[in-house]
Amino acid sequence: MSTFIECENLVKIYKIADLEVVALQGLDLIVKESEMMALVGPSGSGKSSLMNILGGLDTPTAGRVRVGHYNLLELSRRDQTVYRRTEVGFVWQQTARNLLPYLTALENVELPMALNGVRRRERREYAMELLEGVGLADRVDHRPDRLSGGEQQRVAIAVGMANRPRLLLADEPTGEVDSEAAETIFKVLHDLRDSYGVTVIIVTHDVMVAREVDRVVGMRDGRTSTEILRRRDGERIISDEEFAILDRAGRLQLPEAYIEELGMEDRVLVRLRPDHIGVYPEKEDEEEDEASDEKVEA
Image (tube, rainbow, N blue to C red; front, side, top):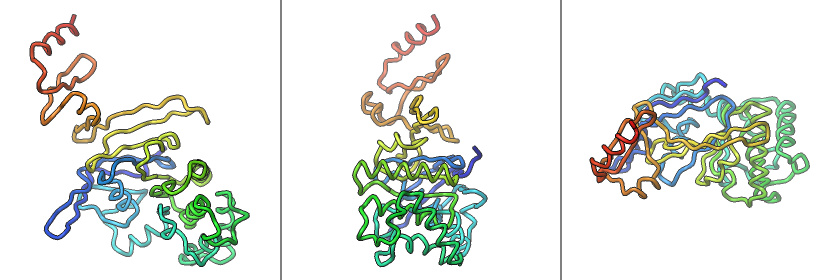
């Protein structure tokens, strides 16, 4: 698969009164075309800032970011609007942001196409196709208040796909539904990815999403810190592997649990071994370190 999204040394600084808040601190990220991945991390890790930038809702302070053939740092306001309408679909956690309460499911899905000037017959046919694809062919004439939370989110996914985007951004799409509805929502996202080739990025706090996507990128302090890769053979999961991410500047974020377990603070000792790099707490005795070197050489 070819590269679809490329972020290099991405920085985002928000100014609040006299304060500057650094949301992204030199973030690097590569996403392949038609990949289904998740961004996870605690509040304040930079997930939402990255999502807003990729969605054309915000502009980075510095760095480089490309989505398809778009350079997001060079877009005019008009180009940003075109980008949001044609390249990106959004699925928000809150139903009120996804659906208009006085429109039926079918009318909600048709609306983005109507705003883009799509003819009525064409948009009706494609809206029906999408609602069938999300398993709601029998609910097309129902308004949101007559749909369950899971059904509302599936309609929202169809709305996000209405203008045939190449990128679908989902913000906590299962955050307000039960586990059964969540499973259905993930199946729908997989099916749409397979049918339409859309790239899907899910932004969430839930690390259990790792079981539902191809790759999970963990964020911490405005940078990508860890990555879980899932390898499949058809429907069968072959392996899950977790990696720490080494960015272009050679920076590496150690897992917090490791840092706490070893009491690492401020500085660490780094030693080159024959087949790996060792990282040790500063308090480590140099004699013990030398003895370890001798053992390896022996």
